[in-house]
Figure 1 (cartoon, rainbow, N blue to C red):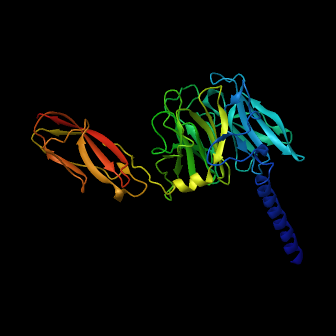
Figure 2 (cartoon, rainbow, N blue to C red):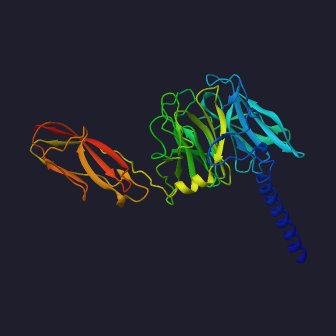
Figure 3 (tube, rainbow, N blue to C red):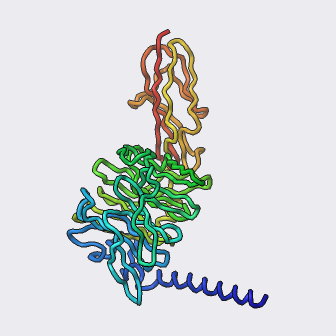
Length: 397
């Protein structure tokens, strides 16, 4: 028994020493390629080291768990992948060595939880993977080739987050791409969208999720030129997500591309690509832990979870329409919402249409044929609003 306890003590001591060694390196002057750490104002990470003219930083960075390898991407153009590469630096023998090339024509590197697999984006809208070998990394192979995927991010629970349109067949050009989860049970693979409020109509492809699933960083409010802002969503106890909120003016400081977001495991730093075109796009980093904590305690704006459905009624008939409880959600508590109603053009409701804000019922007796667009507005305690509109069609018998 003494020998067993002695062996156990040695193993625990070795494991603890390893953990301390990893933590010590993250806090050492050599961490992060030896770069001076930023504060609350974003700064370019490793200028002239990761990429320099005519190349630019093309996607997210990724660190190994011990912080001694950093993976990144560079390219010459957003228009094609001719010069696109995933490269890395490695800290060994007391210094950073590299850069070394992992592969060409891929981007978006992300490590598996155990660090033995590298996921990345490839041609045809597919996700790819390589496995760590004694000599480096195995040749890329398609990861779930029946699904269009972008930015696969594994988490501690065993599922994988990705951006997917859930179409079968990579030849189909996606119109809408949602942040989704991949769950594998035996031979079954289920891709399920996170839905609202995380996803808006259109492209929702650039994101990062923490290993413990405590938060998501999204490229939100994306326009036709791919300009966007970075927003954060927190996971709630019921495993749904809060309405995303802006990371603030220091990060969302004007119209620009913002993508490739990555947060270190200790939540201390946020990395992301920022720029207006290929000439000025670079990886930036900023102190994140304070933002992460403080934004939890600011107001969440209400949002539409399930839009109101159009209704029909005959002229001369009374009607009563209940606004469903799931129409609006306020992550600060739905009891904070004040309901009002008006026509969609801002005008008052006709005298024969009544709205009871306490019972959330639209009622009346239709007096004239026609279409009436009725908008229900909710306002929270911070005067943030959300609205949904239904068309009431009144027909003659």
